[in-house]
Image 1 (tube, rainbow, N blue to C red):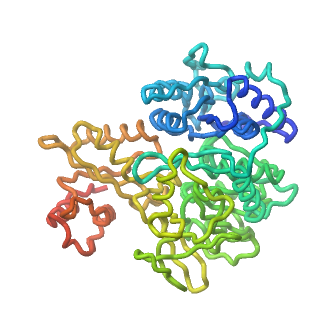
Image 2 (tube, helix red, strand yellow):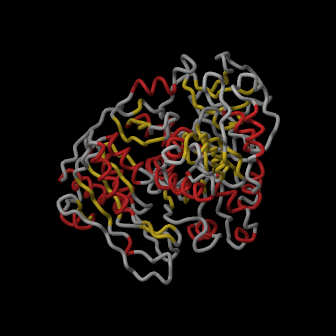
Image 3 (cartoon, helix red, strand yellow):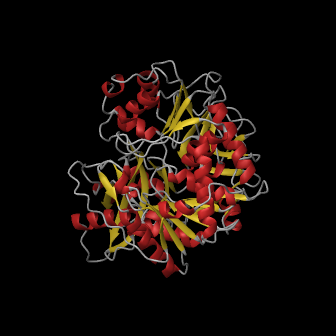
Length: 564
């Protein structure tokens, strides 16, 4: 289903195979071979799964960058993976907003060149002129920048291509794809998944967690640019021969009942979305949901962040009419598929709990010193043995893979999340315990945002923490120390918000930017973030501050909190 409700298309498995073979031949004609990396920056169109599967068919490694990322982010990722080809679209509609994707790609290719990497080929889907505009009064003017010799139209390339392509034989541990996730040191990490283990895990978790049966209609609302889209829009459903819905638009266009309209239209039986979407739709009340027939629903899924019980109960009662199982799935880009999740009809549900580990997964809770917490308790969530869908390395950086995931607790995979286990053995994931932020399911690091903020010529220092947000789960709360003799004013706040949007992406825009004459630092110069988190929520119980170099700064920060 397209951005506009009038736009929709269907693809059978046979037609998909034909298209995939054609595009695999196109990639080969551009010199793509087994092991080469192909970057993809696309909207949710039918060409996106075709491009991914064409890569897989010839043993090329796809590296998808969500089409909401900035040109800087795309350039950095193409440079890191040394992409031979970039696949994109001329543009797309997101609700009423038009996105100039090829413009962003051109800027990114120029920036990659500056970093020292030349992208040889760019293949472009002609998308904007075949869809219904998101704005009725759109005048139709749209220019696509073009560079002859480098840029090629998808449809022209496909005309000549043969509809048959013999698959490249792969070993079980050969790479299938890589996907970048934010790192706490700021530089993104290229998480690498392999052919057999990942596919086995994607297929098995999909079948069991969603209780998929023949004739079911499944819909995961995630963008393929995220791991949820890789595993549960593409590989998991297709490996099970499932019929699924793919959606290009937003939950609010043309109206706030769009999700429910699609469930009604396609008679969806399994629906998988994020808590942030559920919370943002809750605020419009029950009426948009109640005007559609959702009686075909059997399993409702939640992914991306822990779901609060209030949103869980609304999902269960209003959307599921109290007869659907809710699977609150905990997993990560790195895990490849669900690792802690209820099983529908088999696990008694507790609102807000991810419940129990999937088969073969062994979670453990550890305290700060690495001692195992038995029975009830709360601590670091780690895993004590591998599972098939687990990432194998970080692209071109195995030492970072070991230090990020395995060095904190020897012999364990560290998720970076905290969790508690209740008296019944259920796991409740409590959120990040490292310097990472989860905003509407987008993971980013505090240092990544801080380094962008401090690029501003008027800013001396910046510290970023998360603050609870009723819709996004968490939002960014930034503390800014301006340079000496520089004013902290509205202009600076606006410029900083724009800077973050441009450098990282719109989803990273800070909600609050506060003036901080100084930051709470220990005598060794380390910023005490827990104090800043307390200031962000106006909680004066800041705990022990005896190690701070200047305790008086705390009172100043509370006094400077914005009134809104």
